[in-house]
Length: 179
Image (cartoon, rainbow, N blue to C red):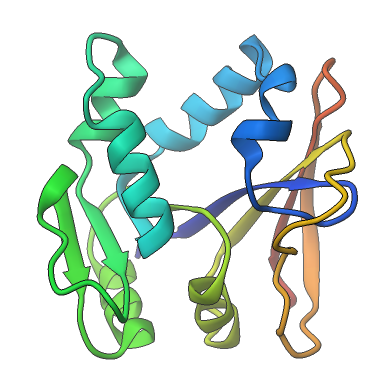
């Protein structure tokens, strides 16, 4: 059975939107190494529509290094209620019941399924207890406004599995479902 691993950037004030604006000063070799560990431990990506479209635009035209070639080559499973197709950038549109589709993906043989981005899809995944590891990259910055982490969820408890601290001030808090 495969694990579903989520990797999400968040500010001290809980903002998840626009990490390209507030996160870049902290992206260094430690950041890159941890990110590569997650990516190379997966053989598929799970994305919501906004993350899929943004990543396809940002990564799709690049090539020539191991990380970029890996992220571009992996199959992407895209959850969306508005897209009619997701054929670009190795996309596969999840149609119908997202929780059932993700459950079926997790039951396949293979490496982890890596999920980037946070939003509506997370509410479904958390409500159905489908996330096995939640890697919250806490950046030492206050954004002052924007979309907040996991807004709208009911009371949900997690167990802290691991803490990873970078010299830049980023702390990755890895959580799993509460037993």
